[in-house]
Amino acid sequence: MVEPQAPPRGTPVGRRVVITMVALGAVGVAAGKWLSQGVSDVVASTIPSLANVLPAAGGFRIYTVTNGYPEIAAADYRLKVTGMVDKELSLSLADLAKLPQTQMTKDFQCVTGWRVEDVPWSGVLLKDVLAVAGVEDGAEALRFTSFDGVYDESLTMDQAMNDIVLVATSMFGEPIQVQHGAPVRLYVVQMYGYKSIKWMDGISVDRKVTPGYWEQRGYDVDAYIGNSNGRSDDPNV
Amino acid sequence: MTQTSEAPTVLLRFTVAERWAHRSIAILTVILLVTAALLYIPDLGGLIGNRQIVRVIHEIAGFALPIPIIVALFSRAFREDTGRLNRFHPSDWQWLRNRHRRDGHIPVGKFNAGQKLNGAFSLGWIIIMFLSGAMMFFSSYFTDDLRTGATFVHDWLGLAVVVVVVGHIYMAYNDATARRGMRTGEVPVTWAQREHAAWAAEELPPVPSASSDGGDAGQ
Picture 1 (cartoon, rainbow over the protein chains, first blue to last red):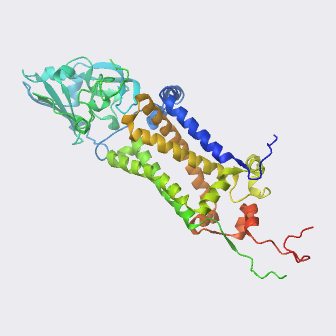
Picture 2: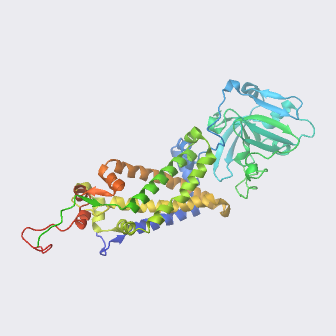
Picture 3: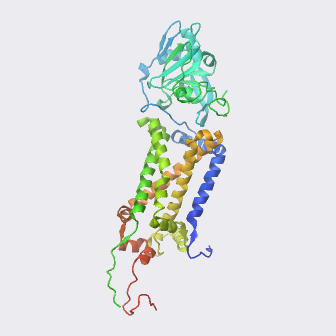
């Protein structure tokens, strides 16, 4: 290989490296939406387990608002249904397993932009849980609490009483993992991920909506995917 | 004419300003990589939680990262060394291609070609990570697609940074004298003559020749 005649001071290779990197970075930002999907697809088809380690490979980014992940022994777990109900409930995992089971494969879309496609979920529809308790007249809202002691969420009764809001006990065909909210979490198909409270242990049937943890910090209470929080993602229903 | 000055045993490799710039960037980079791992890897994030605090630390360290570079640009020695890092000579290409590059047969200047590339990569990643991170911080000013793009670049370049920084630390781990140069600023002449022969020759006074009374009369 013949080197070009170098000027006495040498060629500014360092500057060229920096300029090339910055240019590639700009292309990456401009085309990242398509590139990241392509990269995720390639990773998913070659090394599927990598997505569990690297969110950039198409996996979940795990958020908690407290120290570490809260844990509870499966035998000690109870889901309490309280408030404006005919009969207050305290459901063990075995009780939940006896209720009608529903499965669905749907995306998980975060309000910060990432989306995990085609996640298999199963559990009990929220409306089926509420049917056991019996909702009193005048109840318009639901408040969900987490045994992390801090996080809470909300839905209106209209948003909840359908076939797409799930009290989930399983993801990816196995019991929910601790970082995803074991043993029971909510999965609100039509809304951004912050509505799908993890480590859920309480459902309170109320007269009106109490804004949840992130909603007190500026996010929309009605968190429809693609139609809230100033975002335009594809809907998930 | 008689040579009166004694030959030095050490050479000044890095000034105080350069050492502080390096140390500041190193500390900030370690903070950024550790907090990034906690924010990013699910199994690690669960160890300490406190995502909001970890996130703020990452953001502060990220916005602070360019400051040592900007301050160091007031130092003439730093500016001169950035010039040396920037410029490649034919011997640098030779050095990169040669399997026996470490045996000293290619005289290396103050920085070898690997160090020059590391310097360029470092400036490149600092600029890109700063800008893409700022886009994520001020996300409300950008469209969803650009936010996703900034996240994409920040994620994957971050992984590349881990690889290169680990390589940089590994090279330093294997050369205590090089570390001493960055810690105290000085390196022994013998080390400089072995690892950076062309630089040592520049820095040292011309060797007096027995048969000549002139410095560099030569043959």
